[in-house]
Image: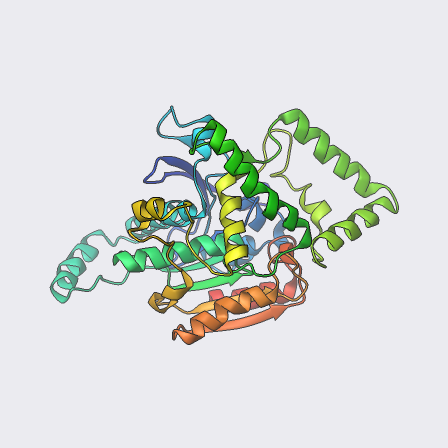
Amino acid sequence: VIRSAGYPHELHMVTTSDGYVLRLERIPRPGARDTVFFMHGVLDTSMAWVSGGVTGSQAFAAWEAGLDVWLGNSRGNAPRQHSDPACRGGRYWRYNINHMGMYDISAQLDHIHNIKCAELGAGAARSAALAVAAAAAAPPPPPYKLRCVAHSLGGMSVLIHLVNRLREGRPHHVSRLVLLTPAGFHKYFPKAAKPIAWVLPLLARLLRLILGRSFCFPLYIPTPLGRALTFKLLLSASRIPGLGELMRLGFKAMLDGDVSQWDRALQMPHYNAEDMPAISLDQVLHLVQLAFSDCFRLYDYGSGTANRLHYGVSQPPDVSAEYWRLDMPVHLVAGRRDGIIPPANIRRHLDAMRAQGVPVSYREFDFGHLDFTFGVKEELRIYLMKLLRM
């Protein structure tokens, strides 16, 4: 898609510290110091940022403005490979949203950091700066500025990465953060998700009682035939006069008034017979936990003993309680017609950040959830480019 639109393209394969192989794409400007990393949301891929064509894609707009553009992917997307050949089938899907932040985001930003330092000739100069900084007990500034733009679940993952790295005293590489309708707080969620929120935890508990505590599986259409039939039916139905509009009204009613073009979104190139994005059972369970707890917490492993094993405490840490650690400007963006993560949820992030002294701004657009990536409108493009030039 990137090359067919007339832009340069690089593919980088990045391996996380827990062995997952990720696809990191780049629209390169090797000499540029201004750099941006885009991270997609749930059941989406890096294609989200380039699928709107030359004039409707935020990634292309950023490259035209002179930025070196990087497009991240999570482990739920192709190639779905692991450095350990035995990690396949159900074992591959044993992860939650913690892992996306602490491993997927971290590995990709570390990779970008290493590439930019090498390209900008920062080797010798940086070594000298490191020696000076070691004496001053402060890391030297990188030779580039990395802005991060993240949508939905990608925003939640980036926040987990940042808080975790800052807690550990390790560099996070981000100089400015733009969060487009980020996940994390889910007191308000669409009525269509409520049966899932009640049934899935009970089903997971039953299956793990029978098949073992580590049992896991992905949530997506698993077979090429199933995907081909589903997407063909959706495409055909959307083209029938009256039926297409009825489908859109149905999506809108189920998703609490969200005005995104969900029927068209499912016809994008990354939804096809060969493959589609997937989400693991534990990622969905994590979102359910957030909805019922009304807190932005790390994954609850189900018992005080299991949580102590992972966190050293009996309760999962509250990510939003550590927003005071954030040391970069944050820009929150919400959609007034977003039924998936409505503005009331985004304002929970805003209130927590303001209360803890984070430099944060807030902006609302008259958009649905997918409007922030799918066919970007001019007013959003102008606003984002203003932020990326800062």
